[in-house]
Image 1 (tube, rainbow, N blue to C red):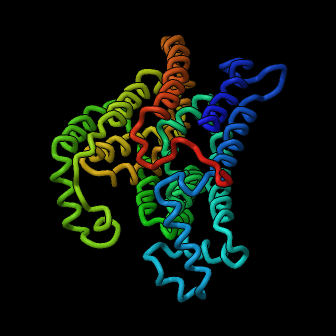
Image 2 (spheres, one colour):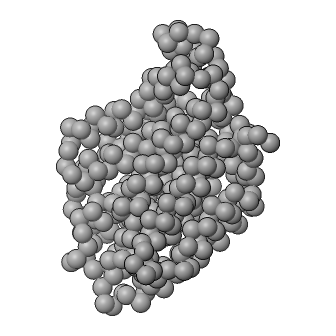
Image 3 (cartoon, rainbow, N blue to C red):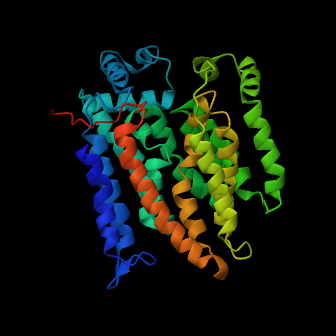
Length: 359
């Protein structure tokens, strides 16, 4: 477990020695250092993990080794996986027969974009970091190489949305889907980001959410009956997962996002990402009966580590003290939650305890 403790405690120590509001000490910007140290350590942990970490790495290794013995077109028929990942795998195979390099390249490909985006967009870097490891799909980075690659495209997609480049946005989403089909759900990001939802939308949204929770199984069965092949067929079994905790947390986040900020001064970027949270809640309402909901949500949850700090920084005079207290509370609560989960969680993706590849 030591690498995970180092991953969190090094940025935490750096935060202690800074002004928690500006992250600047004697003119030096610790914001870059906090997130920089985290993502450097995160990359090292991903690159050096053993094949036992993550439930799918052994399957990816087998796929990689089988590809080595065939030419490109023959390798396409080995596994029913997306063409983008197959091309990446084949190109790596031309350079080396060591699967370790595939792990290293995917780790690099998936950490650098979020390092850049979080460092640029975050208002409170430690909160961003701790939300990333507890609320965003942190564990998926250790297991699903294809979906990890697809999630990395969320960063350029975000900036294409922000800068109103719809054509390039669609192209980028389609490229991401070449690594994992589920990435196609990012097509909803563009309209969601630019729609103007006011406070009154919450009154319309709450009954919709309630209906989705009450009839989640029936709605999902209708969807699966419509899409009976491919991705939905592969993950089509509806079971009771009991996953309500994250749904409750997301509802708390949406309430927080309206209580803290001054609606008159909140910027369009924050509003756009807050709209993503509406989508997350609707999709999460199906998580208690099917794990596919979380897979769809992964792409949107990656923006929560930016959104929540932005909300906290958008306080007005009447909520300034509440915002400061909430920052302290969230830093403490989510840090404690990460360490507790290391020892007590169900660990579905098998990332605890950590094992290095040379052991």
